[in-house]
Amino acid sequence: MHPEADLLRAARARAGLSQRELARRASTTQPAIARAESGRGGITVASLRRLLEAAGFELVMTVEPHAVEDPVTAVYRRNVDRTLLRENRRRRVDERLRAGAEMVTDLRALENATRAVRRRRG
Image 1 (cartoon, rainbow, N blue to C red):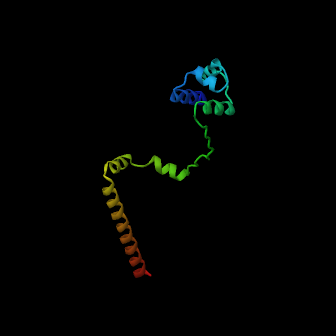
Image 2: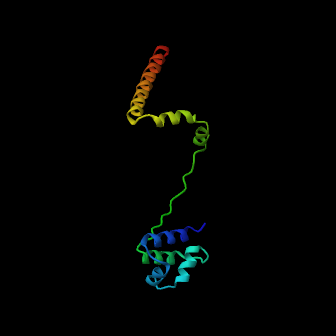
Image 3: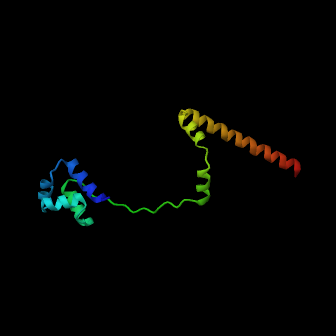
C-alpha cells in the first residue's frame, strides 16, 4: 500500500545494502531508513530520490494521460466471442497472416461485387 516504501526496499536489496549502510551513504540514520521502508513515515519525493541515488539508482517519473475508452468499443468488447480469440491465439503467426490476407481478398471481391450490382441498378 506504500509503493515508495516498496521501491526503496527493493532498490536497497538489489544494491546489496543494509539499512545501516544506506543510511551512512545518504547521511541519515538507520531508523529513518526503517521508517521509510515500512511506510510509517511519510517520505517526500526529494527524500526518496536522495535515498535511491545513495543506493545507486535514479528516480524517473512520468505523467501520462488516462486512456479514454470509447463507449461503443466497450459495448462491442463485452460482446466479443472469446472462443474465436482463443482459437486465433493458438494459430501460428503464418496461419494468422494467411487468414488476414484471405480476408482482405474476400473484402475486395465483396466490394467489386457491390459496385457491379450498383452499376446494373444505376
